[in-house]
Image (tube, rainbow, N blue to C red; front, side):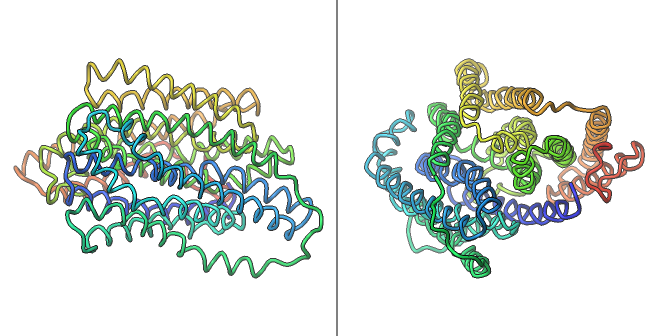
Length: 510
């Protein structure tokens, strides 16, 4: 990673940090207003499809739009790239509009499938919550297209901040809309948040568009390969997300509030992946696409190694810290209003399990960008399909022994397997290996994070011993600071590994 990549990564991390903070607030607002019970489960079932669209569209569309734009721009110029992207975007928005109409028509059917543990009254309430969310599906599609085009021009901050905007507007709507009960506000809150996310990006998008020069080409770019790749990407991510639908459906049959416990634990853990794997891979992808397209495989191997080293350096201490401080994290962020101390005990266990899964997923993110740069759609479907089948089998077995936490354990198994498969593909197709300096870096990071987490655990035990009822705020602040300082000191002192140098993250010599 060069200086510009490091700067862009820092910008994305800061932006995603804002998204993470507001995401915590959104989960806190949901916990305080809905608690852990059937109302929370109803919202999660109704939100399942809009959430899928919100998460899936960037994963499906960005890996197609960004390489297409760069390829056309390099071959035919800026105007041709904009024209091709506009045509593609028009068809995509039309397709998303059709999807929205189909969702409205089929809502009673798929909501029933998603809620085997619900009564007929619960399903009726879920429908009432779902229909106000429908506009969000189209708005999220438009927002994703704008984000992808801004990233082409290395404008990363505003696309990364759209999640924070969505969260803030969602919270304000949840707390301020004149509707009762609070569950009735959640559907409108989703649509208003999606509208705000789109409007937040439009001024910068229009500003960038005005700066484009060049005559419009007379010959159109063939878009059939792009649509074919989108189809494969949609199938691949659909196979991946299918297990999340199944997780939520199975959780509704584990008792009232089970889906909510899994949701809160997963989303708290997910922030680790956002500030590590997502941040680094977002910056990596445009350059990696160019390197793969030009055949510069040595540069692609170096970029991948440095990205993985950066993700590990961020995700490992954050993950171990989340496990050690899990009780205080849940208390500080969620234990308000309808969310009780008993709910904290349930969520903290799920948080610890999902944290291990998210660290594995974070390491998968740069490897996924490599797969996207290859533009081999069937590979995306094969990897995700394998993971889904493994997790489905694990769900069926583990739920019998661990209840709803068996669903979280299956995520650890599935995502670890996915990491192994993706590393194998990188080795086979890119001739990528983990060189000795990078292996040393990985060991140093792991040891530093492990010793730092142990120090925080001992500090936490000492505080709770001398102070019978210490504030979770103080434990979290002091523990977090101790983790950061000890991890940095160990990595840069005992193990003598600089976190950053002029040519990038210190993951070994080129």
